[in-house]
Image (cartoon, rainbow, N blue to C red; front, side, top):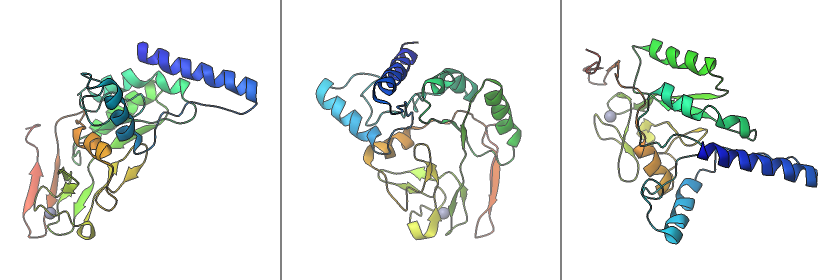
Length: 215
Ligand SMILES: [Zn+2]
């Protein structure tokens, strides 16, 4: 309720400014790529380390559920659903999933739920990273500065394709490294669903499967 009251207030100010100045103002809920790092750094300098607020090297984007906590997709979307009404300048909701190649129904269940509660713009973050050295497809692991193949350790930008949701859009952090705070934010993201299911045939003919949690 408190967080919502802040966004409502920002929305009211936009209406006031629009009436006075004749320009259209609106709240934009997906901030710039590097602001996650910069604002946290500035606040830490000014207010010190505050538990649950400035104690990471980043801020979570806009009205999103803190990335290091682990709600279910439905809990996350229920928490976030009322904010976009006050953010006509732009917004996105998204959930983080494990590899669900063999369980697309799990994704459909979330999409149906999101549609029914009025989510206007939903992103689905599911691992599609690809290593051209060993053939691995799935989720590359975060390292101190970038991402590497969990199977063979490859992190050569010319020999892999890594796709992560930067903020609203999808980016390739291996080709174009991110600021420290953004990398930390992505590294801290927790999957909102367990039960990874998938299989891939590696370049050497080995087959790799993930069904541990669902067995
Ligand atoms: Zn590899």
